[in-house]
Structure formats: C-alpha cells, structure tokens
Length: 274
Image (tube, rainbow, N blue to C red; front, side, top):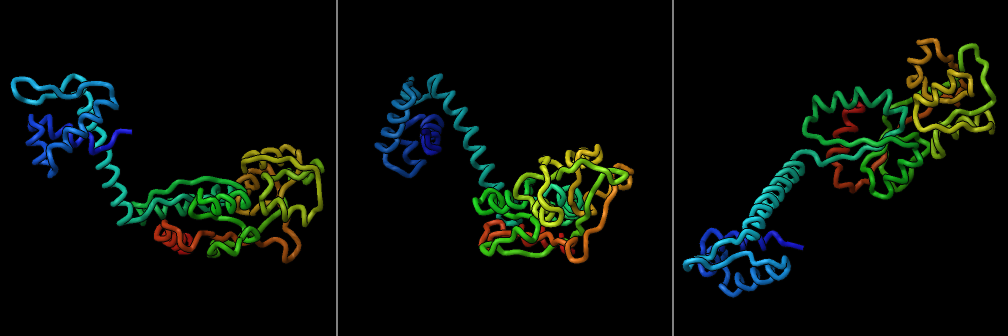
C-alpha cells in the first residue's frame, strides 16, 4: 500500500528538481530519497522521474501520481481537522432506539439537540430492546433507549420516560385471536404474553405495520398509549387500560460508562430529561 510519505518524497524531488535538494528540504540523507523513490517505482512498475537537462522532472506517470498524492494529502488533512474538531466539541454518537420511542419521543429531542447541540453528529438505528442491548454490547452503538426490563448490569442506565401501556384493538373491539407484535426481544411483546397468555403471533418490524394490521382486525397488541394516539384519534383503533400495576413501563438510556462518546451521551440525556 502506498504511504503518504512516498508522495512527500516524490513531491520534493519534483519541486526542487534535485534529489540532493529534496533531501535537504525533507531533512534526510540523499540515499533515503533515492531508495524511497526506487521502491515506489518498483511497486508501481513505472518510472516516475527522469533527468532532463540536469534537472529531475516527473514523467507522465509521475505527474499522475503527484495529482493523486495531492488529493490524498488534502483528504487526510481534512479528515484530521474534522476529527480534531469533533473531539474538541462532541464526539460522534450512534443512538439505538425502540421504534415506538423513535416515533413519539425522539422528534422533540432531535429538535432540541439541533438547537442546543448544533455540533453533535448523531446517527440513529431502531430495533427491539433485546437487539439494542446486544448491539450496545458489541460496540455497534454508543447509547440505547430501551424498556426497563432489558436493562443489563454491565451498562450504566438513566431513566428517561414513563409510558402507559394499553391494549390496542380495532374499532368495535373485535379482532382475530392473534398477537400483532414486534420481533423477539421486544419487551412490550413479552408483557403482552404475561398479560394475555400465548396467542398466535403476527410479527412485524414497524409501528405503522403493526397498527395497520390491528386496524384491519388481524389481531391486537400492547403498546405505549402515546405511540398509538394518532390512530386512536383517527378512529382506526380503540385502546383499553391494563389492570392496575401492569400498565406502566419506563424507558431507560443505557450506555457503557467508559464510552469514548460519553460527553455526547451526557449532553443528549440531559436534553431528554430537561
């Protein structure tokens, strides 16, 4: 693989027209310049410089190499500048969140982050609580918004939101005897089984998909009241409260205490709790 230093040596020779002067500019002995150029030419299989009228000048291949080199150096300098700038402000943050939290709680949080943390670079993925905890453990994400039941002792946790779970049915309350749920690893799915027993499962990956199936009478589900409110107001579904003590669930922020993105994590959690 070509080294940035290879381009620096080639550039010095091309600009000074001399191996000796290039060595002086680079602060090394002449033999180092000659050896590095020779190795680069051997690697590329082409002559990069030639002597014309006593001056070392780039060949056509050398000019092409210099052009690529200049672009690579600029990209390298740009990357270093951006990374240093990010370290001085907020490190990039990879957030994983439940689908229901993304639908209801995330938009106002993102709006506040844009206004108060404009330098924060945030990427977002969604999944079940189980999937998000696994991703956090693998280091694929830095911060996870999950149901309290998914909390793991190896992660730090901060309570964020308290949700009221409700049974969701099609208008009229008549539905097929099926549970319309997210994939395995969803804590709301587990709470459904605990409350209503085991029913045939209809698994979907999105909130819209689940609500569409419930509205069509294909089954019922258990979700936060805030997440299904727009469908209830539109008259597509109806909701029923759960028995006392079974309807409340908290959403937690989980993260690794020593995460390199800790400054960004703390800032975003602070906005969520504001």
